[in-house]
Length: 67
View (cartoon, one colour):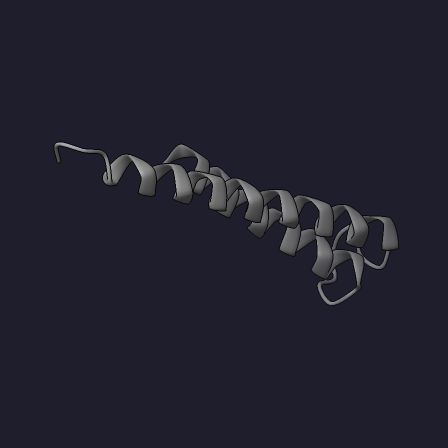
């Protein structure tokens, strides 16, 4: 469950950085700087991978024999 929550948090953080980097969200020093868009994409992809990893691990545990 921790991996899923961490993955969702990383994805949301990446989405925030993407929106700031592209200039869609104003009001910070990150607004309009392309490197934050790239960093946001990387963080969002790591978040998706982490959440999927946690989801798959949780699914395997639920299908264990004897349950």
